[in-house]
Image (cartoon, rainbow, N blue to C red; front, side, top):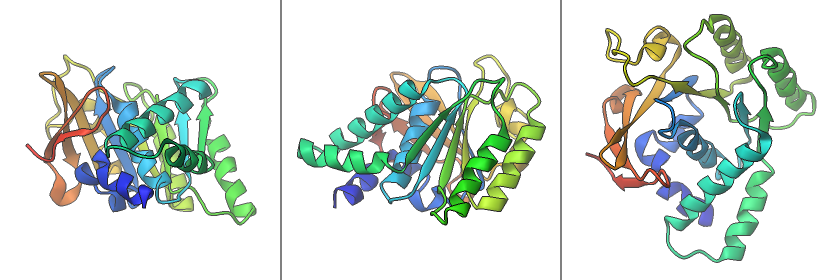
Length: 233
C-alpha cells in the first residue's frame, strides 16, 4: 500500500505518467546548472523502484556516495509529502528498494558504453530480470556525442531498456528553430520524451517539451523537494 501511495504522490505521475517512463526509448531532463535535473531524474527512478523494477544510475560527475545520498533525499521527500508514515515501515521499504538500485560512477575519460553493455549482458546470462531504466547523468551534450548516443541507442534496442539523460542547457543561449534548447534541438529525433526545468520566481517550472499529447503542459515544483506545488498551471 505504501508503494502505491508514494507513486500516486510522485511528481512524475502527474508530469510524465509512470507507465510512460519505461516505455520511452530516450528521455531527457534539461535545465541550466543547479536547477534540479539530477533530483528530477532520481524521482523518475524512484517510480520504477516502487514498482519493484531494477534501475541503473550512471553518473559522470558524482561519486557513489553522492549518488546514494541523492536517492536517500529523494525518497525522504516523497515519503514526507504523503504525511505521517511509520518510520520503521518507511525504512524497511527503502531497504528493499535499494536492492534494485545500482549506481555506477565514471568520469569522462573512463565512461565506456562497452562496460555498460557487458553489465547488462550479465543479467541475461544469469537469467535475471533486466533493469527497466537507466539514468545517465553528466554526459556533455555541448560536445559531439553522436557515437556515444548511437551506441546507447543500440543498448536501448537490444535490451529493451529506457534511457533517461540529464542534459545541461545554458542561460544565455537562444532556443533552436523548433523551440528547444540547442542541446536537444540537434538530436530531437532520438528523443521521444523531454522535460525542461526552469526557475520561475521562487519555484521550478517543469515544461513538457516532448511527449505526444502531453507536450507543452506546465507544472510547478518546490525547489527544495521537487514535489508538486500545483497540478497544472
